[in-house]
Length: 66
Length: 171
Picture 1 (cartoon, rainbow over the protein chains, first blue to last red):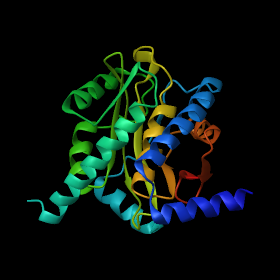
Picture 2: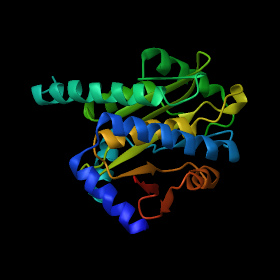
Picture 3: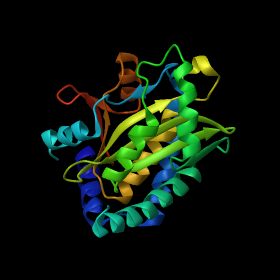
Picture 4: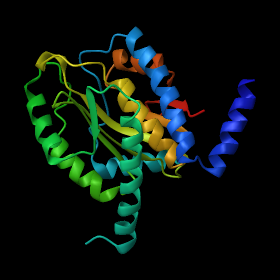
């Protein structure tokens, strides 16, 4: 089942999503994320990111290369 | 001076960013307003220097201008709650455009005032943009600590030690 969903999602990605499909996704995903948000305690300091320079970030991307 | 191809890319992706933010805005609570990063937002981040919780004093003003020039396909978002900047973030497609990286996100530290949870709203906007540019996954780069890493995991993201990021396939 999970594999089927993944294959369908991959096929859809190749073709591209219509705006209507994206809007429907947004409504569904927003509800899912809101539910999680109500159940978790967000840290008082929430952040992610690097202290690298822009040039270093560019090199970092080539290292992972996909 | 910017190359014509870069100016063209900036214009094309500006429209995609705007549409992604509009779609996200229509799906979130009314107390939040999603906008692109403006000088008003960059000025608001300076107040965050006063926080005792802040781990890095990110220089958003300088970092943003360099990032904006270099990455026309970037995604950017400033999240406002009742006219207060509560989060700001920058990301861009991966090198081969198979995914979307959330390079930096920072929420207003809570010792500076109350704010609602913001991560669900920020990541929704990213997931919408990712679909619009046909990215198959999202990477949240370099969580600042284990608490933050654990929070992202609760939203379905998995930690990848090699690279220090969390990843989720878009289904």
